[in-house]
Image (tube, rainbow, N blue to C red; front, top):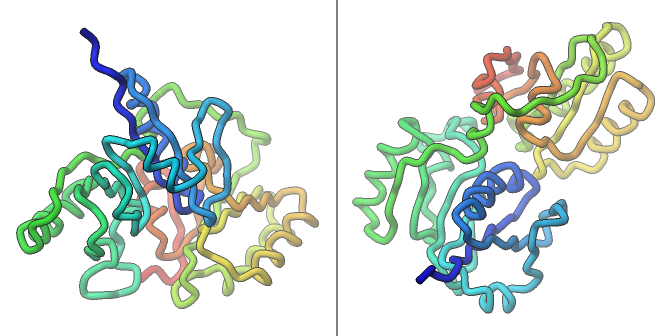
Length: 262
């Protein structure tokens, strides 16, 4: 007798969740189980036609998932299912703290799925200290597709393409300082630019300044969403600061230039 399909909930707080959670959805479906998405108001609805959205917390309770996967820092504790943290980036110590915010235990999760040796030992120590969650070294779902030979993206030109993806915290982000330099380079060099911001970067004046530059220059594309591997493959080099996205990009063997990296 076949077992009924298990149900899983994919909990998205910001747009970066799509690239992280979709590999999980693919594996859930491959096993004959069901996945549905819950989007917080802060997460734009970019679901595909074949992806199921659960609109309310009441409906999420009725969905009764066996587990909930979240790449954010929190999750409602009253939802059913095991709460699983899958993270939204690598530990970088980018704020020069003694212990990176990556390792903050906020009390929301039953399981932490660590990405590798840069995370696992410290989380294992926290597991022993706190005693209410388990730690498993699983790797990171977003990086799975980086090692697939089946992914191909068409390039729009043969000119070098620079991807600029700054972090959001004003004290360490390069977005404010580098705007005039990027404008000058985009106007004088035979390069194309893809500019994507972290979804938490919310300075509307700055966003408008970059958008206006892109509107005026045909070799500049300003996109609010970085689609991960798809965006990476369209570029030749990354310009960045202290964002953990630099680690992801270097996995592809492509160069990264940083500005005031901590």
